[in-house]
Amino acid sequence: MAVNVVGPGGAQCRTLSGRMTIGSSGSSDLILDHPAVAAHAVTLSREGFAVTVEALGGVVALNSSRMQGVHRLDEGDELKVGPYRIRVSLSSAGSRPATPGSPAALPALAKPRSNPSSAGAPSPSSGPPASAPGATLSAAQARARALIDARAKLIWGEPPGLVISELLQAGVRQAEATALVAEVIAELRWDARRRGAKDLIKGSVICLAVSSVFALLNSAGFMRFWSLTIVLLAAGAPGVIAIVVGGYRLLLAPPLYYKP
Image (tube, rainbow, N blue to C red; front, side, top):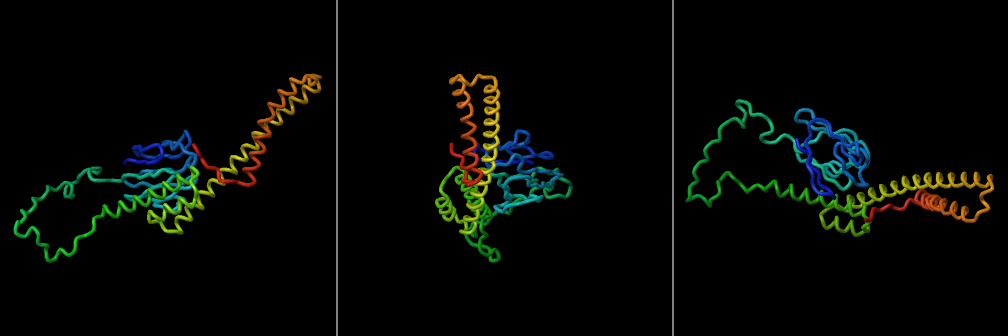
């Protein structure tokens, strides 16, 4: 079975032989290096010709619907992890060994020779021609691609109103487009708070270290040298900046876009 991934870095294919962890962490079996992908996003498990997927972290969607827990995949199902689309090619023709009596083991029957005089006449019992299944599949794929592209555009800072209008033009319902935009902005705000907390911790550690060095040198009588004071102030400036930026992100939580 093959795991096909399409995303910002192009397309890639991996073989699924047992258990595969997908995420942005370096310890994942399939690494999707993108800030919108959780460290460990999903796990694919194969048992014979059945494949199950388990959502581990972040936002994971199965056929455009957010999923949690464990689900069994069917042929044609599509996973969305951040801006990536993942499909698992399940058992197909030639993947199972042919057994006696099975359709794959039977010889092909000779096609009846067509009658030229009735080539253009439809069969009385044939009815109207059935619609090609590929057309419906292509429309579904185009809609899924529009949703994935919209998520990526929002992450990179495109205005939400423009993204919603593009989704409506692609045939996505207003409620679904609005829900997608709200979900992505909520993720970006959460990421802003997370990074803000990291900045606060980093800035506090820097300021604490500089203050300790200042107190130590002051007790030893070295702070009478202005050059040393300037050096300590310069060393503590990044910590003060990190505290201010971290507090702003943590309290106001502006959407943190990933612009190149």
